Image (cartoon, rainbow, N blue to C red; front, side, top):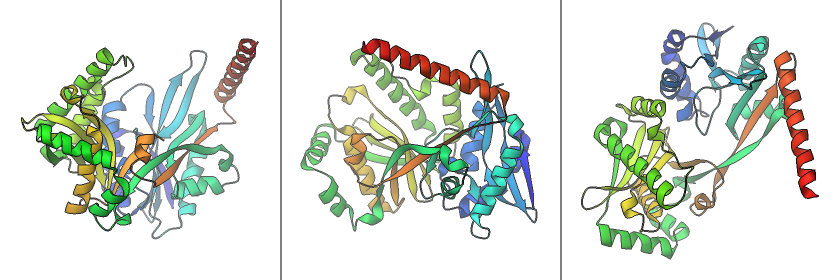
Amino acid sequence: MMTKIVIDTDGFLKLREDWEKLTKIDPDATYYSTFEFNYTWWLTFGQDPGKELFIVCHYRDRELVAIAPLMIRQIDKKIAKCNVLCFLGKGDYFSFITDSSRFKSSILMKELFRTIEQHSSKWDKIELTHLQMDTKLLRYLLRHDRYSQYTEYLTSCSRINRDGFDSYEQFENEMVDTKMKHKRIKLLRETGYRFRCVSGGQTRDIYEQIAHVHQMEKKYLQEMKGRKERRSLFEDKRMERFLRRLFEDNDHILLFYLESGDGEIIIYKCCYLYQGVLYGWNTGYSPKFSHYHGISDVLLMEMIRSLFEDDRADQIDFGAGTYPWKFRWTNQFSVSYTFAMWNESSRQSRLLRMLVRYRELLRAVKQIRNAH
């Protein structure tokens, strides 16, 4: 039995084969757990001076059986710097990856956390977010005498399960109202749209198109709708580099879109496909078609229909966030939690917590004064 910590990119790359093997057998794994996603993210964002790899690997008989895909992110608070131990990447679901088919998951979790605690001099705070319910990691935290008090509700994640319906017709009868159906009929009549689906291996040319559409949407929302806060993923140079790397010849990337009779993209939705689940992560529409209300509803209807017809996936996951539009499509959802614990032995941690309490006190005093 052995546990080690990978702290360099070369060591990270050497984990590929074992990492991919573990994700295939771990039912808790999502696309955000894959080596492909995490390594691509690290190559793009991990070179910052304020980031350091901290991948905890647990072995049994020289075989990798558990991974905690973590990093240390340094946050500069001006008065003090805080080293936060957190997940690699950015997404809606994170977890530790384990082989629970042969080993008791609680024992594997215990070994991973033991190593994390043994290296507490490296971090001031541990912050693990987007922990999905019914996963081994969350169960371990909630049952732990010490960790449970630092585990709290974060958000909900809506989803559509195909196996809840016998056919698309049943889904449409139960979940799609007459107004939505009329939107589809009108859009089809006036644009002659075609529904398309392509994978990452086929999107080399279309990538440029969706990047252009998303930036046009941002400009339209800023200038015509006063949405000054609106940004585009494709304008951030590093994010754009990350997406290009991820898209290239990647059949886990699926792009669904509506195309007008003239070949223009009306609206698109990018998804990750992993183990039968479509994880939606980015949508954009052309301002030219903004006067059509409900084009996102039309795209979703076509996407859901395609799930029943081509057997590509079992589930559409809308991702984190409790928004009314999601619950118009489904009454099924999971709950995500966050785990945040300060390092009691860290002097930096004590100073930062004191500053946080001081700030909260000032805020409370200000609210009392404003009330009077």
